[in-house]
Image 1 (cartoon, rainbow, N blue to C red):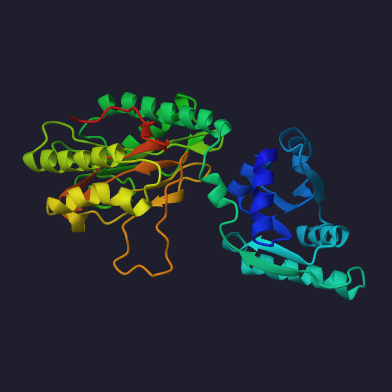
Image 2: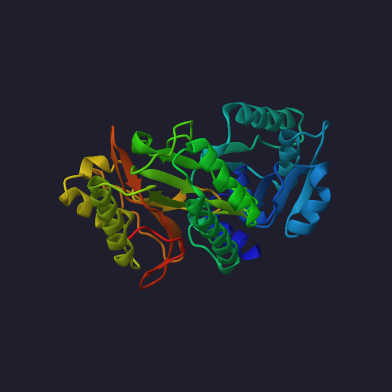
Length: 372
């Protein structure tokens, strides 16, 4: 983990950030290796502190040897400990993750810093300054330690969906099918599900994020199954669209179109391509066939410690600002490629796989079979 901290420190130096408070669970785990459910990091150019409670005393020693533990207790809450650390380190400016700190948390931190100043224990009150996207861009490029658990999460997911699909019956409900998928993931070694499983049959498949209900799977109509395993903190994300019984001509048309769009996008990936351009590889094919309005979401998103993270593969804005730089997909990033078509009253088709971007191509990580 040490080199990750050094990369962050370099990033902080470039932006003249004296100290950074990390409250995001995923960023905390990425930087420290700490897998507990509660904890906050404070990183400066010379210090790396972790604030958590006594439940994790041994765990911090095992998982985060590069960090100094400051133990939270009833008489030593986080705001107090942070103000003490700020005094010890002589901090004047502390940056915090604006996207992960509530107004109430911010108020408590400010009050504690002011109390130390008012008590004469600190020459001047350190300021809290909001920052965004300090750690997340570093996480977009996956290192060797991240690829192995990622591959395993994908392998569990592939095995689970391959086992479940032959067991599905038309009279089963979406809810029953979703439970079968979750059991299959657990039985094959998943720590849990990466996100709530989607099983959407018939007209429900026109809802990209439908919730499984009591609708029977039925015959001859689209069934979207979106699922993924969580393993060692990392996530997989896979979607397959199937039909039980003989598919009709419309299903074959929609499925072939979405599959071709996905294949074009994966084949066109390369170093230096932007998220806009990658999205267009699939979107232009679907639009040319007359279904552009039926593909409403972006082509994909990064997948890692969070199920949705950077980079983003999305449609280019109709009127992008002059200041907006095209988002280049970094070599080493892992992201989904998931074109879809959704038609109200009929259903939808989505096909999703994870891809690891190399300098000259995108490596397909997902191996679960698709309809042909």
